[in-house]
Image: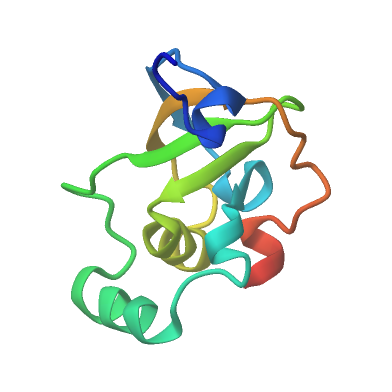
Length: 113
């Protein structure tokens, strides 16, 4: 019978790399599990604790969609905090794969603010 590959893995071609993104407001969208954006309580807690600082912030984990849009899978709250308090700040992003689906029609982080 062989090894079964989960449907999600069939959509992704892995090619991890680390990049820096200047405007997460315009270039990043949330994953389907976080379509409404960051959890408001968690966002408020992060704003109170870290403010607009990116010091020591782990990279956002994203996939690159077929249309070049970055889809955030880990770090939606961090991305929202930086987009809200320090727009235009460069953040570290780890691209862990490529999706075959286009996400250009989804709301960006800036549109969810």
